[in-house]
Length: 499
Image (cartoon, rainbow, N blue to C red; front, side, top):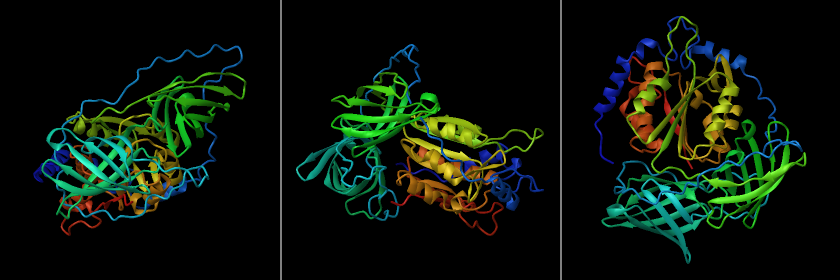
């Protein structure tokens, strides 16, 4: 990747300052009297949020297909298009030599699926993937996994062996050879890994997302009852779908047939079966409710659009009263990233736990990779919205089953200073990195930090770990302790992404 001038980031900082960020006040200093606003505001904010904190309410069983009374008309099928992965491959440049410390190799994720069966088959690397360096097809050749990736001068071949969820390989391109490894997520839908050219010590990131598998239900589907996100680990399948504001489904595979049970918010429960087509692009099936109603339930796979990433900003309001002008990170980020066609930006305001759950649930039904950015007051116990705490257990429950998440970033004071990032990593099977601030963060300073960090991730395609390292290197107040003569105190930007 071409080197970029550091001056761009000083320009970014000046642009934000000139836009009036600094005069808005900072997360832990606005206004001087210490009123409750900004990302965090001394002990008063923490006390206010902690006082509002209550044990998470018992989870209500979330239920599926439409409730049809015996005389109710059968819902009309929804006509949908079958979107297949694009066959035109974009020419990808030779992997750059990135100066970075190799990630420590640790055992594959040990998070167990909901089923207690000890003999479930592990996910396979065989299939088609969209990766950092273009589309890649992998197949089995004896005891090896072999394949090819990219197009044109950057096209290459790859060969290696799998042990557990880790694939260790060598690769060869026209003018370079090298080595690397991938580690697959627990659900088999993605992998993350490293590579380096022969003779080099620095490692670069190489990640991938499964495009489709003819033998798996994992992925996003469009059905008569809305979009459905399924995750298959071995023979066990779990998922959610849109009907009724969010319904649950789970079951076991028997050959190419999924026998499932569902439950939906209005209390209806039922069962059914899907049969996966030979190409894995469609399924056909039927359902039957506990009210003895039933009908067809068919689906079409929704393929992600190549080269597209979503930036979803969930932001709490910062203003205390009507006298204050509105100000928002999301509004500025929308203007900032409009220049990058590959980034789809969505901004929503959260006011309470219900709105937070709603928008996290909707993120399940996006086919492409997602960077989820939560911008709010914060403490080590959770995030704040409208003066109330959204605690760690609610955050975990809302994001643990999200689809293809590339990064979860908390633009909130002190959230990363507690156990929330670690808890999220464990609850999600370490599927995606979690980043945030260890300390209370200045409102204007944190804007400069987050714009720099997200630009490195979304435009320059850096891994979150490398982007954090670069941001801390370039901006002293992104570290835990800023320089002695810095006006802005250190926010402590960190990322938790170790395998």
